[in-house]
Image 1 (tube, rainbow, N blue to C red):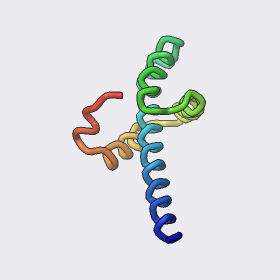
Image 2 (cartoon, rainbow, N blue to C red):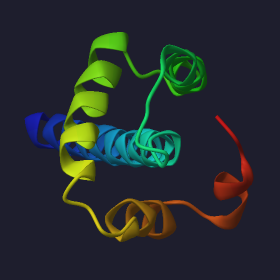
Image 3 (cartoon, rainbow, N blue to C red):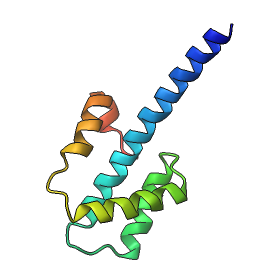
Length: 99
């Protein structure tokens, strides 16, 4: 019986990890677009937070992602790492839905 419980837990963890990577990729792409002019003002952050709250991302996690993305954006030359995750894990209808 324990084996079955562990199998279900493993599946739940995989799903949570998948959801988390999708959420982080969406958040990262939103930040990259907002920061395209090398400025990120309060109104842009509020708009992103509002959209991301629909994805059930906690405020603390959003702030961590924002900080990490801004730090990486200076080194980044491509959106591929983010779009690859979304393309690999979402079907066409899921991609069309907006947060």
